[in-house]
Every structure is written in C-alpha cells, then in structure tokens.
Length: 153
Image (cartoon, rainbow, N blue to C red; front, side):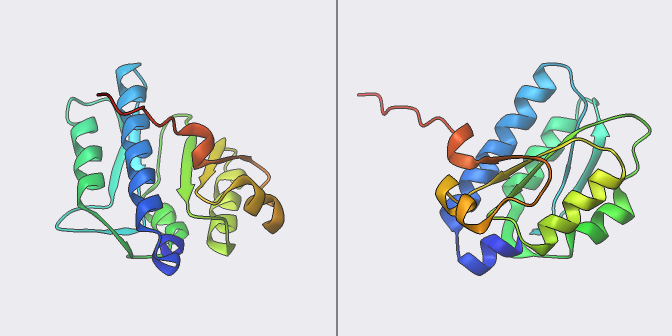
C-alpha cells in the first residue's frame, strides 16, 4: 500500500481494487477457497479475511475492498506473520504499485513457506525492465491482465 500512497497513484489503486475484487469473485464462483490480507487502512473494519468457502466469504472480501483507503496501516510481512495460518495448501496473488524492499520481503516470506505466488504491479513493462526483476516469482503488469471494455453507445 505504501507504494500507491507515495506515488499518489489513486487511479492505479482503484484499478487494482477492481482486479482484486474480480479475481475474488471468479475464484469463489469456480469453487476455490478465497481470502484477503491487506496492509492498507480499512475504514471501520478488519484488514484480513481468512481462507474459506463460507457463504459470507466473498461478501467480507468485497466489503474490505470497498472500505480500503490508500494509506498504509502496517508492514505487510508483520500482518502475514500474525494472521496467516492455513491448514491447507494455497497459492496467492500480491498486488502493488511496483516492487520494493517490502515486496521483496513478502516474496521471501512466501518462498520460504513454499507458497506459490504471482505478483502484479502497476508500473509499465518497460519501467519494470528498467528497474529490474528480482522477485524470483511470476510477475505481471496490471495492464497485461486488465481488459478495458469498449464503451457501448
């Protein structure tokens, strides 16, 4: 979250929220257990939904996304250490503006636990190549996975 905040990247923040919500809906509809962890400030609510398939699961995730502010609440690795306990195997998707030391720490956190991760960044592919890719995981640009729908007359 801190990267969006520092870059004042509200448009990219909103686009990321939309993609996270869409990914949660599609995953849930396909029968997958879903959960959410954020290090952003959530107005009047929790920043964590544990993995599950309960009827309220998707609604809880979408509620957090609707209340999420573009401000950092805590270090993501600290939140993961406190709250991520899963009795089953899972994989995850990490969204950020671009990768930095906090993203690297998160990648290491999941790598040491042998949890497969995909990373999605908002910076362009050319900017990503200029900065270098050091995550050791699959990395995509948000524009590579977002499809803009044409306006209908």
